[in-house]
Amino acid sequence: MILKNCTFFNENFEKEFGDIKIENGRISEIGFFTEDGKDMSGKIILPGFVDIHIHGAGGADASDGKEEAFETMSRALSKCGVTSFVGTTMTLPNDRLKSILTAAKGAKVTKSKLIGINLEGPYIAMSKKGAQNGDYVRACDIDEIEELFGIYDKIKLITIAPEASDSAKFISHFKDRLTVSIGHTAANADECKAAINGGISHATHLYNAMTPMTHREAGVAGTALDSDITCELICDGAHICPAVLRNTFKILGENRGVAVSDSMRAAGLGEGEFELGGQTVYVNRGGKTAVLKDGTIAASITNIFEEFKNLLSYGIDFKTALKSCTINPAKAVGEDAYIGSIAVGKCADLIALDEDLNLQEVYIDGILA
Image (cartoon, rainbow, N blue to C red; front, side):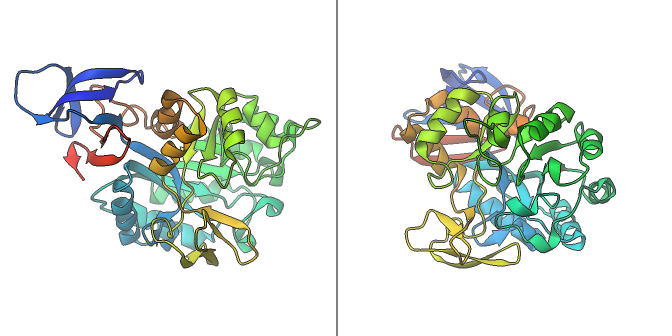
């Protein structure tokens, strides 16, 4: 298949014009070809979006521990321009984590690609657990994660609170096999810096559920910003205000910001009562997030495409916003050789927008979703 007359953003995220040839699900050539193809005039072609921190969407959740849950998420996400995702667990008992990984291994998704699992916990700080279930919070356990790897070897990321247990050996053991992220943590600046020096390379939903930056103590937020690690940002306009997002991207630049949805099963379903990690959460009329009964933010109900448009409306430049939704998350979980940009040899995961940036078409491995 050839997509003709494409206005697209190339692997350097610069605007280019040409034809994109697709063979066997991959981009085989980019140039100008005499063969006939599908005319994409008037459309803007972007790399498919990548969500590396998503609990659920469309009524299903990764923590359901069912193969069909991943398929439901896959279908819902493909409608939002998300072509790859990392299903994210909550802090749960070992047997539940096993069932989730078993389901992920067996899942045969047909739309957006499930590229792995993100373990948000269970090795977190009780004081910063947020909507996580404190009954299942526990200390870092190398053997437990090795056992989980034995079930499904595509564990891409894990969130830990390094100060909550003896984590140095854990970080050192896994840092070259998955992305170890700091989050749900009460660490001070020195503890955070030590963990980063030890191998932590990512921060889970920056600012949320971590020690803040003040003018006397950098906390986790300030220390992460002052390092070279990648930082997740929930860009729904509720978890982080636009002014803070603007300032944060000025610090992170175009290569370190990672837009994530952190969405749960209510995403795309409107108001109602839903379940998240064994707890009841609520989406109120006009609400931007799912909340616990006491009003605590539990999770988002957004998607990466909505966040991309949010970022542009907040004044983030196009290139920085686009990279935060595509190549940066792909790099954060070691998948950038295959997804995240429009380049020869990569998967033909593409989204087509009109000139007003409305989503028109989604291609996954070169197939119209």
